[in-house]
Image (cartoon, rainbow, N blue to C red; front, side):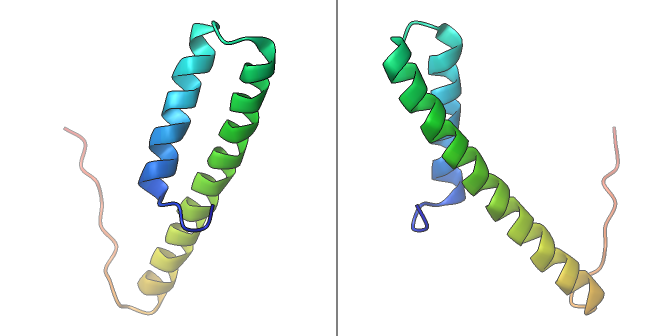
Amino acid sequence: MSELKFEEALARLEEIVRSLEQGEAPLDEALVLFEEGVKLARFCNEKLDQAEAKIEVMLNDGQIEAFEVKES
């Protein structure tokens, strides 16, 4: 799964969630989908944690400046 890109993993995870929400898959298939979904969710979470850590390092090293998001 390490060669998988974040965006691809997220898209597949969204497909799995939609499929499981429909509730039409047989139990065995639903379990397989759920297991795949858990793995993808963990993968995505790890990627986000890595990105956050990288941004923190860049902020602390002065490589980039913090910014604020303005709500409209």
